[in-house]
Length: 344
Ligand code: SF4
Image 1 (tube, rainbow, N blue to C red):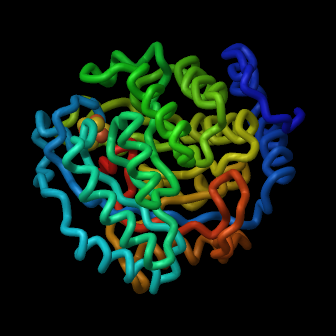
Image 2 (image 1 turned 90 degrees about the horizontal axis):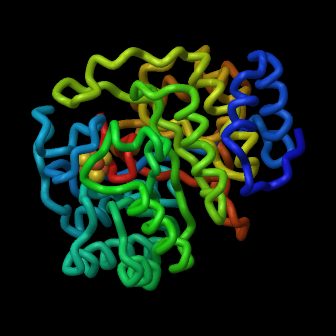
Image 3 (image 1 turned 135 degrees about the horizontal axis):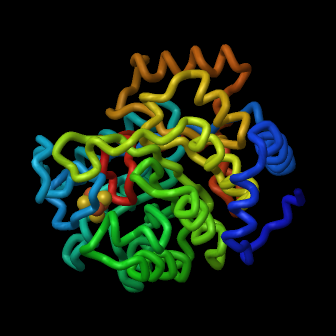
């Protein structure tokens, strides 16, 4: 298996990878991983939700959709000062990048100056900036870029041919359009999806196909394992076989060799052994923590213990000019499973 960067994958090729005997698939993915990254380093990422809940969309997995009774209390957009305070704490805790997520279908033009102000002030702290705000128009993406935004997260969620089973209030093409606007504005992309939503292996291959055949591979590819939240339509779904999740990670690594493949939502419920298999399969980034924490917390301690047991260390905090999500990035706060800071 060559680690050539390709944008012409077929679903059959990806399915053939999924179908490999498990040890063979891991061997190939690990080889690709080593060609581009130090496999003993894992990037640590978190995210701050700057506007939570009350979303008009109907994403079947999401506790922030206002139409589902999930107990999430809608909160308005945070004040810039409060965000900056969190960003300052994040930097103090070692973060080099600060991600701001808002549960919007899309920001209104009048929201952009407020978010732009946050971005500018966070940037002024010497942090890289990242945002996930829903669908973006061209001019909005450019305004955010001008304010100092570095990265934009927007997930494809699932395969095009399974999308209608999950979301009805926006189209797949809307997501592709937003990603195009983000790329056109010169922003770096973070884009992945969710598995365990009742999709088939063909659908999982279809999601990776859609990601790998984008004009540019996403700099980061978050792979979320569905967090089933009571009140959402997907609550009660059959659990995905953990080995199938590892296969998803491995095929993502092979198809997008230079991207950061990120274990995102759902990691909290994974065993240490499953996470270790994911790292062996090429995952090299994690989201952790549901809340911004500047000191030790159970999640952090568990992660540190796992890293120590596996001989893995967090990527060094260092800004570089690579065209992929750079090592050492530390995002802060809620672990999302969508592109809109939705979280369990
Ligand atoms: S996933 Fe995002 S767009 Fe969908 S309901 Fe949740 S917050 Fe809204």
